[in-house]
Length: 232
Image (cartoon, rainbow, N blue to C red; front, side, top):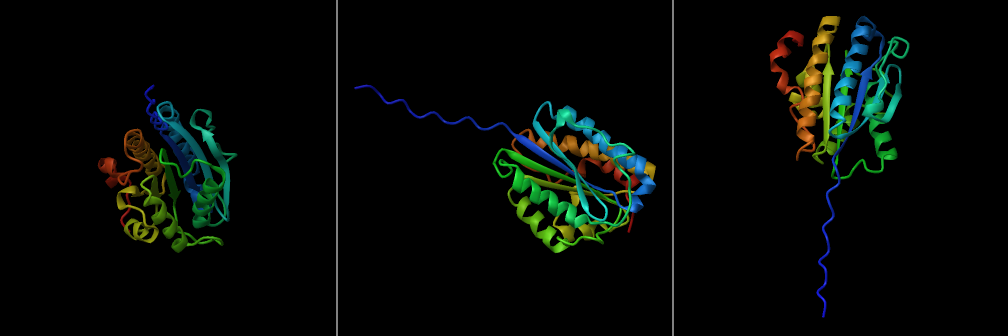
C-alpha cells in the first residue's frame, strides 16, 4: 500500500504595494507650483528605485473644485512626471472627495486590493483645509481611514501647510507621526520633498519585510522638521 503524498503548502504570494498621491491643485498652490511639480517628480524617482525590489503600482489624484485621476495603477517603472502643462493650480479644495474617490476606485477596480500580501500608502499633500467636497466630508473620511488602518495594511501620510497638525491627526484618524507641517514656500516645499523621500524609504523598508503598514512615516526625519514646520 503506497503512502499518500502530504499536501504541499502554498508558497506565500509576493508582497505588493499600491501608492496613491493625493495632490492639492487649488488656487493657493500656485505660489509653490514649480516646487509641487518637483515634489511629485522626486517621489517618482524613489518609487522607481524601490519598485525594483517590491512590486509597486502608483496612482496620482489631483484636486481643486473636484478631484481628477491623472494616473491609476501604473507600474512604478512606467511612471511619467508632472510638468507645468499638466499641473495648473486653480479653484477650491475638494480634499475629502479626492481621498474618498481614490479609495472607492481602488476597491472597485483592483481585484487584490484587500489581500494579505498587499499594502497601501496614501501620500496626501495640501496647503489648506477642505472647502468644496460634495460627496465626502471629514467624518466619512475619518471612518474610512480608521477602518482601513485596522487591517494593518494601510498607511496614510499627510503633509499640510497652514493647519494645526495635531487637530488634523485627530480629525482624520491618522497617526501623528504620519503627519507633517510645511511652510508653503519654494524652500519649505523643497525641504518637505526630501523629508517625504525619506518617509517613502522608511515605508518600503518596513513593508518589504513583515510589516504591512507604518505609523512613523515622518518620524525618521526629526532633524529637518523644525526647519519646515509651522507653528499654528
